[in-house]
Image (cartoon, rainbow, N blue to C red; front, side, top):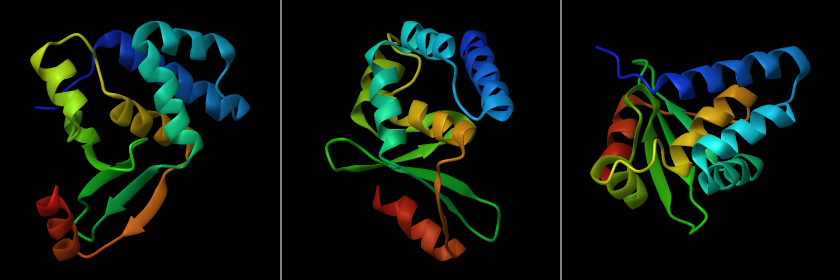
Length: 135
């Protein structure tokens, strides 16, 4: 069973992806919607995307994880398939308090996928396992 984002987020990300395919940029009205839905996390996520802080790590078995170099200099692991991030903000604000839909790292992953700005790193299955075990 796939884990789904709230419908409003799915719709916004879908519209943003269509806009990027059509005109190679995110229109201002979509950016305003992003700020409305995610608050200050939207600006922080866009900053992470601008700094090219998102790396897609893939292995021959098809496993894919994202690593995001946070503004603090710490690297967080994100699993887009189940909407998970290893950062403390995700654990506290998203999972525990439920006052945020996503953390800035996970939002940056989705935005970088839309804009095609993810760094790419191909590793062996063993290397990916080692990356995930480090946390």
